[in-house]
Length: 298
Image 1 (cartoon, rainbow, N blue to C red):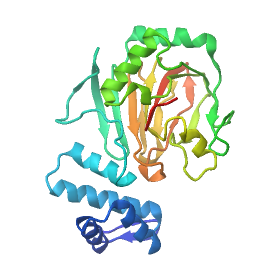
Image 2 (tube, rainbow, N blue to C red):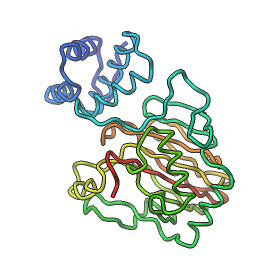
Image 3 (cartoon, one colour):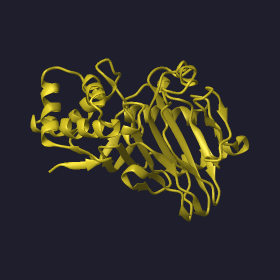
């Protein structure tokens, strides 16, 4: 069955052509470039390639985790670095995070989203809030126009950053995340703690840095692109405050101690990692966010 998106139709003939290009050794970037030159909308082209290659790899008998790894690498090109990824081989219920077991509550392939239960203990949630509270200020956003930071009406929380490893508590959580996602501690930014009071929100956005913006090269000097995000819930609002993924109409409830992980293999909307913090309707929400980079973050 053909699928129409943005008035362009993904036909069986197109799918066959994509598979033929892949089997002939042409990389995804070259295939995408050819499709764009032929007048295809980029979002349609990327979706066609993703769905076609996913099905093709599955028919070859590759397990889901291998399919995802190959697709992620293909989206970034042949020279792509690996991305943070929990070991989900065999569809485990629990993951080894070193000093504790973390529950797998939900997995989505596209966008790559994993909902984690019990990443933090109640005591760790309280301790992070207590350590952060005296240092809270109006949250800023990184601007890729200049490479700096600024106040933005889309983000109405208060926040602060811990430096990496600045306390035993912070270092313990960072080591846990590194073990869980198979990613070096030094490739992570410092943990950011955010406080959302009633009405506060963070409107849908992407966490990667737009390569087309003039300030992005300056930002990337500190550790390369962001590749993944971990949002940890430190407190529970009475209503609202979920983490939303509008492109796939998915929302993660802000359950204390739980977390949501998502990765983006290329800095492009085709990753469908548009996400936001829904407005808090009643109560107060505290979260801790960890961003993971390509290289050591300095």
